[in-house]
Length: 220
Image (cartoon, rainbow, N blue to C red; front, side, top):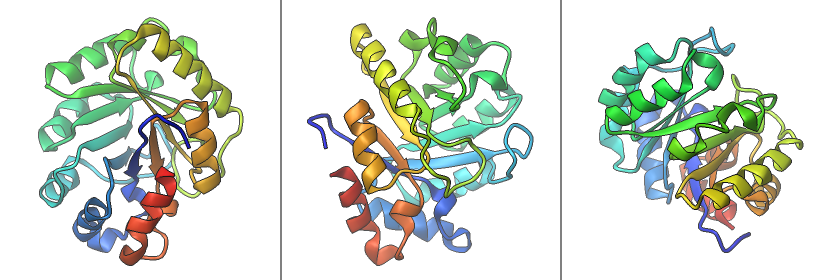
């Protein structure tokens, strides 16, 4: 797909929740680069998923980086709990707290990597003065809250603009894309500049025997 190394971060939102530890171990063995954890509070987004205790319980099932996406508001009070539970990267939405820069400082003060998430309607201007302080930018190519949604085409231009901005800075900032990722949209997202792909259904379909093939296919 691209000369750029592409990381695959399976979203455990699409895993079998009755066997979550085994599912995390299975995607680890299958070649996942990161484990993507979607945290939803039924307030900032219309769904309710998991909390820090689940992340802590899953931590022993994989040594891969835990990529925790906080879809919660207010976000700052929950950051320390997820950091303590074993998150390696913590991403949040600029709409989820009044002071994005302060939230980034909080995450980094806990020894974790910090990311900001852009919803489909959130402009790049929201992070213009924050980009240099980030380790990751996550572009949502669906509206957050549920898995299985279709990729929103307009986000390709946002990905490309972010890639140009990151390259201009010359800093090792990951550009992640989440939502509607399949074999076709994965290639298009990477061509636009993404280097981390979050995928749920595309990884977990077919059961554990298929995970390695699914991950390899997305990697291209």
